[in-house]
Amino acid sequence: MELFLKLEAGYLAIAAFILIITIFVTTRKFMPPNALKKGVLIISIMLSIFIGTHYFVTTNRIHKVETAFNEGKKVICESKALRKVAQSVIIEKSNDWSLNNHLFSSANYKRDFFSARCIEYFPIELKIK
Image 1 (cartoon, one colour):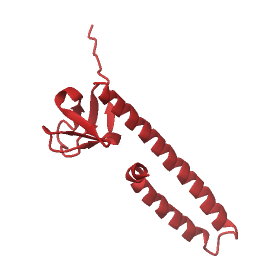
Image 2 (image 1 turned 60 degrees about the vertical axis):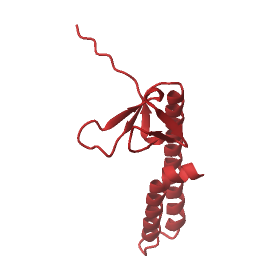
Image 3 (image 1 turned 45 degrees about the vertical axis):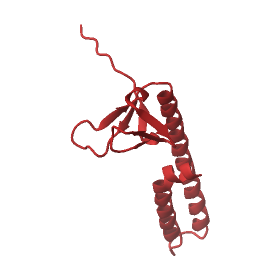
């Protein structure tokens, strides 16, 4: 449950705001009598599907990234601290990185990276003819 709240807190806040707007609009005089029930039900179902899908996709990516890292493969994480050049950091076990509680950390780097914000590294080979 902690991971769900950590990953989806922003989306849950947005969903609450959307539900408040839905309640406000559907309780106006110009709306049909059952608009509140229908509106809240439909919007709640849609938001639940969107948030659930996002959580499913994100947890699958976390699993893939952590599995790749544990197998010794490279992982790319976005560094929001450096916005000018080299916004990505390549992480691998052989460079003294460790994984603990979904966080990549290294004594050689000043900040940790949450595995949900990383992707598996796939090298691109350019073939020039």
